[in-house]
Length: 164
Image (cartoon, rainbow, N blue to C red; front, side, top):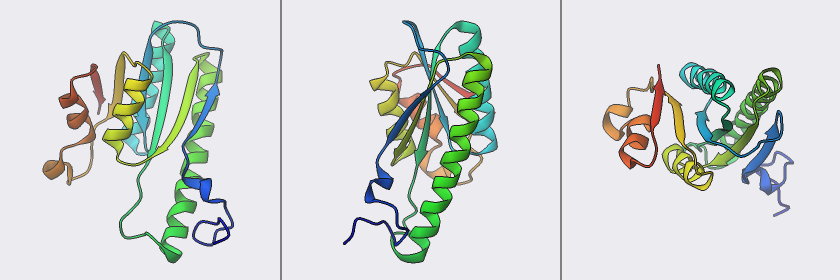
């Protein structure tokens, strides 16, 4: 294999996590984590988090957790899914960068892969987050498996703010 993912011509490191920093240099202080996925509720959560971070002097960690569909493991479906995720990542990254600069909030933008609850929990624990902010679930499936917010609240590690 030549290191490409699904014939896209992109290196296999396309699924490695990325970390970027925007806005002013962070100083000592409290950290807030917000999870984003491009949904309306997640974007409202991000807007809430950046406003609160600005007013309270928090550093903000914005985590975009990419999940892979079990139906799109190989072939054209995998290539389409990767392109879609990359496009969403670039759009979110630009919105986060713009907001960080506009509001003067130190922001770390993290793109990781996997289960949203696990990834957000690990990011919050590793960054010693004081608060976690997520959008309310709009999926009917959360009734069976539990929403990301509910599952994060049950961990009990930090306060979780759920933005409708």
